Amino acid sequence: MKQTINRITCWYLIFYAIYSLSTRFMPTKIVCAGPLEDILYKGVVIVAGLLALCYIFLLAKTIRPDRQLCLLAVFLVILGISTILNRNYEFVGNVMGMATFVVQLILFYFLPYMMPDERISVWLKRMTACLSFFWSIACVSSLSQYIGNIHYLTLHPDGRLVRQGIVDGRLFGMFSDPNFAAFTSLLLIILLLREWKQGDKWFRVYIAVCIAASLAYLIMSNSRTIYLSAIGTLVFYIALITYHQYCQSGGKNRRFYLCRLVKRTAVSLAAAVVVYTAVFFSIQGIGYLAAPDRSTDDMVREDVNVENLTNNRSTIWKNYLTLYKDKPIFGFSIGSALPYVTEKDPDSYLAQTRYVTHNSYLSLLIETGITGFLVMAAFFLLTISESLKRIRQKHNITDSYLMFASIIAAVLTFMLCFHDIFFTVNLETMLLFTSIGYIRYANQH
Image (cartoon, rainbow, N blue to C red; front, side):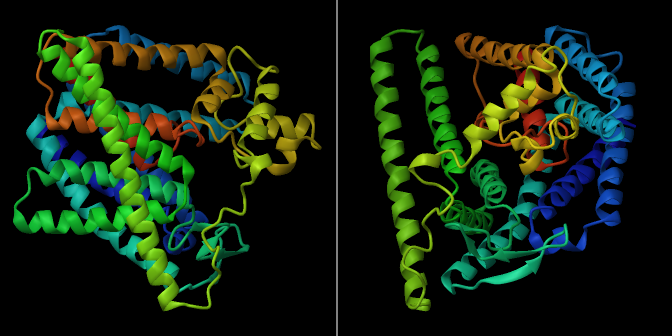
């Protein structure tokens, strides 16, 4: 039975990933809008729920409660209390968001306990190959729009016409949001780099093409958040490798390894700058040749200036922190903050703009209060502490361990500037909880 569930899970996860990616393409986002979008979303959650029930049944006798599981259980209780306290605002949506979180947490977090490492590797390879195929086509199409200076209007799912192409110095291309699209490219690059060492000659050629397409779009998206995420992930990877080597040497000659860390970081950052410069100006030059009448400042960020470096984020954060004071202990639940502030103060900044938090940590604080925030912070800090302990004990770390650790670093950095990923269906949620589950499993075994 367990093998059958694992096969079903593998194919479901590939479907889940494709579905979450499809919501980032403007064409499929338009086609799937309305009732179809609701049906697909609920179908994905229901199937995940059924698989999660199978996981609970199969793992009931093998999983023992520990500190991480206790923290997650406490967080779920807090989330439930918050949902009940805010039952007058978006109650059905809050319950659905909570159900989405629970079933995804069970399914992804316990995936390493259900599947052997070999099957996880097979799933990752199939998923990565499938996703990178569609994503590379979309990236190349988007880059072609930039090179050809193609702009057009398309129907947004909410009924309004929106401009595609280059908007405010950012390449939208085929995507509804260049920030999420660029971050998807970053995640796929991390996944593809893992497959590089395990692939044959022709598969490596395919990987190289996909990485080039994703990297080019990442750079041309002009997303400062993704630049920060990419640099943060690179520095984290270098620090992890260097620290592991330091521990393997017996913790001797700390100064030597600090110098090595600084040197590696400097060289890597310099290489990143060179790659960015080469790709950006090469594509920009090709664009000028293909469309010589284009604007010379078409990649200048018009939505950012000296007085607005955070692109309104600082104002959004300040207003949400002010709102937080109304319900500091258990928060507003998943989707009640905006309905609450609209009813209480319809002329306020948040009620008028309808902005989300644009910071997942702030979202967690607003949605679950200080109690939920501290419990989830303890969960992540405990995971990091156990990982460092494993490295200090001179255990070997595999390519998969490094990849999953890098994904966690990338997502946690991305969460600094974008609204929460815990209660929705998306690729980041799947990879984050799978990565945490894998790291925890590896630390225990």
